[in-house]
Length: 329
Image 1 (tube, helix red, strand yellow):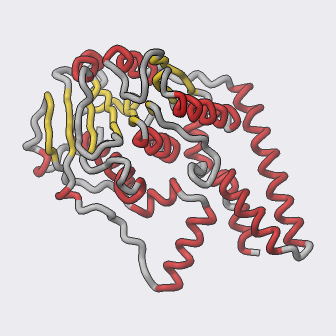
Image 2 (tube, rainbow, N blue to C red; image 1 turned 90 degrees about the horizontal axis):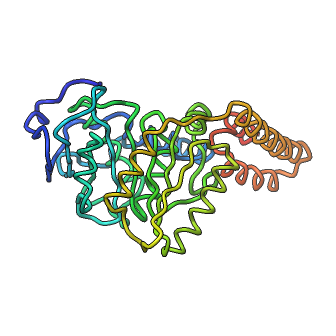
Image 3 (cartoon, rainbow, N blue to C red; image 1 turned 90 degrees about the vertical axis):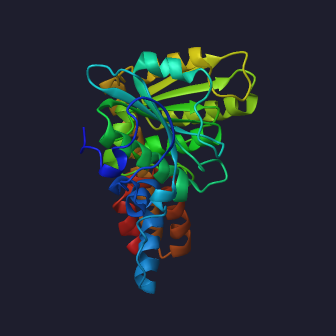
């Protein structure tokens, strides 16, 4: 899986808890041009490119000084025959820590755990938290034999919301996501849909596991809204793990074990149901695009622009390139 370890990584201990790990490789998937391609709406991306072209500036590809970044890694003593699983964890706190009781569960599941330092809720999602998670995933894959079908992302509280954005934008990297006490709807300006090919993978193949304490009422309500949006946008792989007597907290060992088992359960999307759901989206998108086109033809450009901005936020990458064509008019 991937290239062998770099010389800078060769000193990394092979198993056990490894604090203050540094990585040498800044992968293309974590560079800013790729992040905004997957995370921004088409119109927002086009506007950014227009501004850069107008000012004669170029987008800086790296937002991090990688040698200064530190990670905590936990590697079980043994892997499964196909290789280790990998769980990239995004925390709400700044220090890189392994939650209590998780090591034994990771050992039994053969799953590597990695999390970044200085990646808490105060840090910029696209400037730090998202690239740090991608850097961690790619470097672990280069260092260890990892089963690509068991690569997951997850987080707690605010970190969970960042994990959802990564799962949505990078379904070709992360096969599933643990949403622990933090979730959002998708299909709006805060969580726009990625380009069509990536979103199709997310719809039919990504496993989402919601796990929130039964006493954490505000986050449970967020989960309801998030799961409702998943149904609207034809996402097949939603599961829920209950923590009935818990508040706002990370899963205990037993719950984590169930979550990891859920994440490794393949998604079985019903082809007929998925096709029907996608047809509804296509009809809604065609109607919205037609309304914008009609307003442009009538010379009502300000209203057309407002409608187009709303369309761009709602449908994201699914509307391109047609939304971009309308913007050009």
